[in-house]
Image (cartoon, rainbow, N blue to C red; front, side):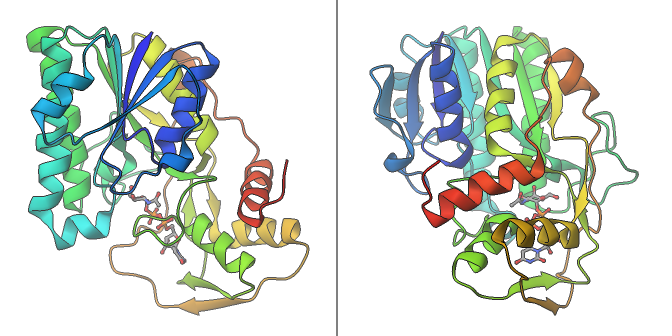
Length: 308
Ligand code: UD2
């Protein structure tokens, strides 16, 4: 397998590169390093790093030479930025996506897996969400991801491209920069623990999410590249927990009580999110099995610089 990983120097990308190396794949990382970081990448004979932008078809043409599989993770990943600058976000997440998909077509790539998102559902009509549920995005980011899903499906019908979109739920783990605009609540809270600062909870903390560990997500990406399933598939654990519950586990592993400040619920916040994971379990033969406490311990050790 010669795999091109767009966004390969980023949070999910760099863990996916490591998972691909474990199965003996040759990996070419394609990244414009706007948020990705070379230090996230292992120096390994089977990893090649290529600087380029998915908005530039010429950059992509070079990167696709000799490639058999594509893992497309490069994106504008901030929901807030997509609301503030919708045309900029569209340029990366729709035009950039289409540039990659079209190279998949013209280079007759065996398999493409790309990052879709739970954001396509907007406010869920019912829980737990199934892949068949109504797509009703409430941000340009969610809309862009759902358009990606439609393009991939159309390219399958028109040209036979084998593509699968993975709808990630709330991914956490090492290398998610807590200062970045797309940092999730866990990486923010972990940073507060490190600095001995109080945790800010928006609302009463009863909101629930399906928190999935990044190494499980990387494994799902690899499995999806090897599978034949088309369409879209959730990547989640199938179990949701509240912020208060998460803080309880966090305080247990920190070995002390954590101070919590409550602020008003943020506009557009979704109270509950939960995923059905039957498709992931059966078609991808994959379970996101990292215990929540174990994932948090790995992250805490990483943030505090404790060697495993
Ligand atoms: C996630 C995704 C987002 C999009 C969305 C779709 C992440 C990081 N974000 O947003 O990209 O796909 O799902 O539904 O995965 N919170 C606090 N204190 C903080 C930060 C957050 O209380 O300092 C709350 C926040 O109000 C929310 C919950 O924690 O209720 C989770 O927030 P998040 O930003 O980690 O993720 P989410 O689900 O809003």
